[in-house]
Image 1: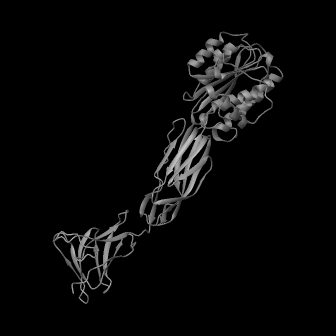
Image 2: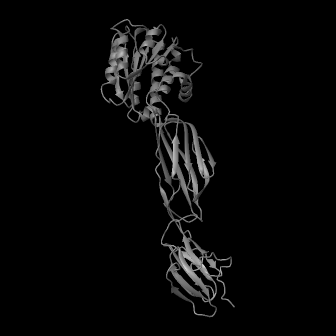
Image 3: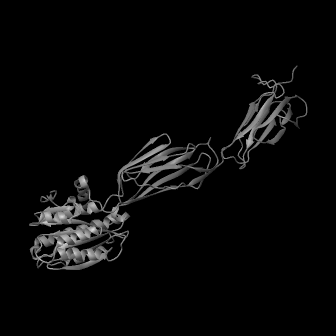
Length: 459
């Protein structure tokens, strides 16, 4: 029979230390109540930047531990029979209030007297009969006041304790998970069959933990509990704080474990100043991998600077369009996809040699025939115009569209001119020197100039 026999604790540990111990102690058959939740967000520090500018990027994870992410009602069912008088009852009060503080802090990361996100706690105590000392509430001070007011005396009626606690758990908030922590220091001496009452509660969806102090019926406590790893037995009331802390840690599940976020930054940007508020981050090219062992009720961030490449594109750009999230629990997270407006990047102009359409031959290296295709590239695609300038006379021709095919004729001393052609060639352009070609986009950004070397007329 798998019943936990507790040894006397060496001393009182802090809540965080006990929670860590509990996570290890329950690993073989972890008792879990509600699963936690994780949400994500992605934000940019700038809405618009100049070409080559920098935009701060923040990727955020918000975690809520299990009892916060999926609201739960926890009912403390506490034995106040005559055998609890003195030290045992005093230790039970301290341990129960510690449990309430764990619920308080776990739901919003702050021990502030409020159990957040819809979760609640209450108190039922019992001796010869059971009483509701505090109905379910999200406020912790009245719960702890009810615990402090308990006094010992009378017999032990487990059946009425189960029934009374279950009635309170079912009274309202049907969507909340239901948890019962039954503490007793003795065997049943009054009332009806507690086994049937415990089975009815479990059948209605209540998760039951049992804690036994002293001369209890271990088999009965195991029968009452949801599973053997929900049973804790100790001969000494000094161990109760540690036991209640273990149960608190079992109920309060981390928002996520084995978390990995992979952020892939667009090729138009480079990455610098990478930092995380929790866990570790590694970089491979334009991909960041952020990992952490667990996410609790907290907000954590990955931050970096994304610097635009001056050879990149204008327009509305996605900075890090692909951010993926995985964890051991299989949760999914959507980060959104904000964009930044980039302006001021130059288009690119080209002047490429092409064939003589009449002869169909590919021109030699010096392009004796003088046929060219004018091109302009700007991935933003914003109203590109191409202009051709005679470097001798200064005459400017255009604007032309990307893909315009021209025949250049060099005629030193002649008047520069443009003549529209039919067929495969769009224009014949006569110039005195060589051609210089540049492109202008819709925002007025001008490309660098490229040259079209024109062969001189035959001598």
